[in-house]
Length: 166
Image (tube, rainbow, N blue to C red; front, side, top):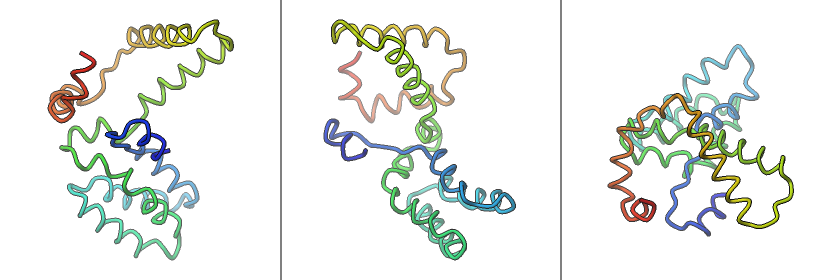
């Protein structure tokens, strides 16, 4: 998926969802070990820097690879896309290391498209999606945590991209 995203949007920094990575990591861990393994994984994604995160992953691998070799292998295979958020200040990391908001929006888009099934024109699809966004933004009662701290940073970091949409 990363390659497809990069092909269309070459400047994109693709962050995989840490929450999903953890869930996938814990999927085959017995209940009695889950808390301990989760605590060790947290050291990886809570690291201050990429170097510390790599060191924590190595520590995790040396401790758990005998029992759960697929966990560290999965983290290593996805490492570049799991650690993008470490390039940002700590408060901003919390805004981008989970994709729950995006996934929720995509689910709503899917519902709209599945319910309608046939659109007379391409514009009809876009209008339906726009109306979905409009409806959902009115329903949102909880603000995105740390968004007020993150937005000014994004405005500076991605100024050339953001200005096109303002």
